Image 1 (tube, helix red, strand yellow):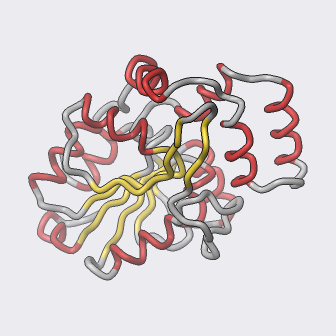
Image 2: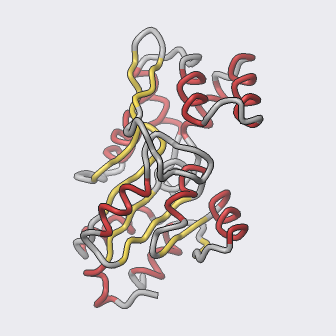
Length: 222
């Protein structure tokens, strides 16, 4: 797919939840704190009465935990997708521009990556502010480019364009709703789960994957 001598023309952007992790951290957090208010919010979202941003703002206010409890939850409950550490080592070895781009929250992303020895990585994500309840601080206030299911608070298309200025080929790796918009513009897309279904429905070129061993073989021939 990519010749080894072409890697100097590549940048790579990777989603976090369900991509670097085997499960979506936000979905699991909400499931554990599910109540009637959250159920009603999800019904409103499905019926398009509220946006994804409204849903995120309101549902997390129902989650009554401290930042310490949240980080402990992330570090104890979630696992890294097979092959990611080798993938990261290959990126470092080949000096490839790399970033984690997420509609999730850096409060959990940073300690999770650090736990696994992944340091000095550019992370673009939303943030939680912990007080009596959780307030969502979005990376972007407005996302006119995000159209794959509504704005997610962190426009991945914007990050693609920034990295496209640096390198000829920008690869994106993802799995879900907040990855739809970038899957329509990225030069090479690795897709699984909901994102794979979306790409197939839209007729978008993509490469199915299950874990990072698949991606290592195709990009790094390992």
